[in-house]
Length: 90
Image 1 (cartoon, rainbow, N blue to C red):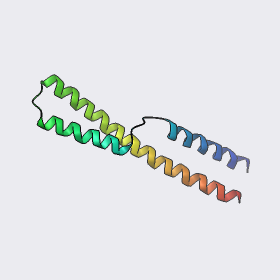
Image 2 (image 1 turned 135 degrees about the vertical axis):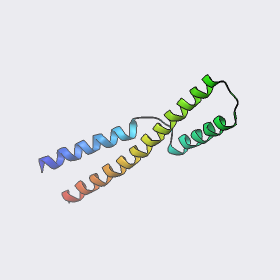
Image 3 (image 1 turned 180 degrees about the horizontal axis):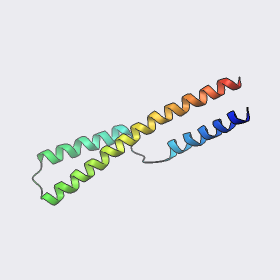
């Protein structure tokens, strides 16, 4: 039973970190930024340096979106594990 309590505490800590870490941007917000930047890169006639900077920004936004999606999946897994531990105590 003591081991189960430690698992539960670790899951609570993991959930806390998943909920508080990272950016305030949602997946939808990041996706909108990506679409706008992609369109801007296609339509614009900017200097190579500016295009390279925007392409680098686009890459960062895509990585952030992937992290947000992974964070949401991890949070669902932690919530499921917390529920399972709760049910074992009943």
